[in-house]
Image 1 (cartoon, rainbow, N blue to C red):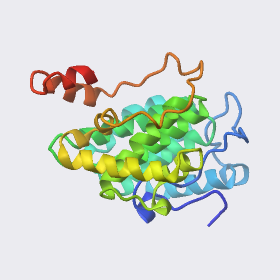
Image 2 (image 1 turned 30 degrees about the horizontal axis):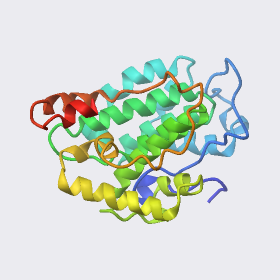
Image 3 (image 1 turned 45 degrees about the horizontal axis):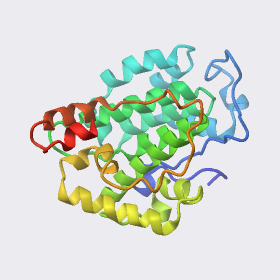
Image 4 (image 1 turned 90 degrees about the vertical axis):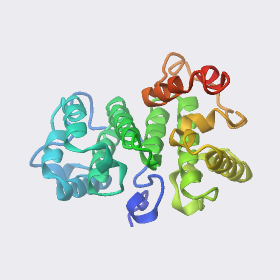
Length: 268
């Protein structure tokens, strides 16, 4: 396997691995460039982009063509939710992977804001798949959202979404997360969170999820119920006025008003 690549979720299980953006290299196609240049892809793209494009071409060539346009994100944010149902992207499979690949193609060509919008929409679509009461594992978009915020120099937001990823992985693994099978471990531990703290949070998230399965549908709910010892970063000026409100979670909290002895109101 090429350097810098790791098995994606369908091969190894829980949250996303695959190629990691290099904040240091700052590689990009340049201002104003199209995401991919038709007729010259294999020669000009780095190996990672070539691998991503080839995989997307095999899954859905029409979607690859959409990524080649300058207004790709605006068009994809309309196309993808209608093309794939929440249930389809809620299950590990070709539809979920195609959406992930599209986000990664934008992420690895320096279109970070657009990648963030694509992964955020995927997260919301996965949440919609839970309406029937069946929990969906949502670690993949959350870990990529974290990477987007890291690239945008929003360290607190990046850390928070890693904790949300950890929450999802902890539920999937019933409190135990093997380091080699998740994207959360190396991102958190290699950046300073002690291994014992990682395992403590994993066990605590599973304990909370077991006690309240309805709240466990939303990792934000469980994160609000643990301590904030993980929050060691100082907010940057960039992220001071940035916050993505999870409308699905807010709607759920509003439905709890009057039934939770003030807890829902406090979390709002």
